[in-house]
Image (cartoon, rainbow, N blue to C red; front, side, top):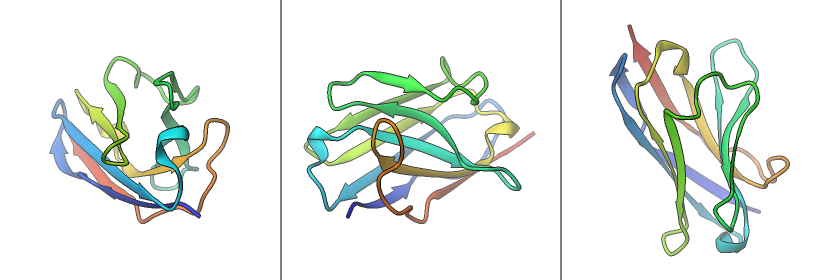
Length: 119
């Protein structure tokens, strides 16, 4: 069973940048796809971006205007996946989570990290 520890969130202003980190444990990290998800208040959790073990990347269909602003990356030696977020907008406000899997999340969710973007 995978476990995830997300960090790096905070309160920022429109146009600012943040880099989120997620350290994973409990599985063979280097062979698994890893993804970032987010859940805004009153909304369902949605996939933001997923990176495969071979660094293929896909973005969520329902996530508007993320591609080009957000970049997902991974460091297999550190068992960590990152989400670099640039030009943050108020609609990016959410709790951000990570999980493994290319098609769907495979494990229970961690605590996530809160990102709040003020206008």
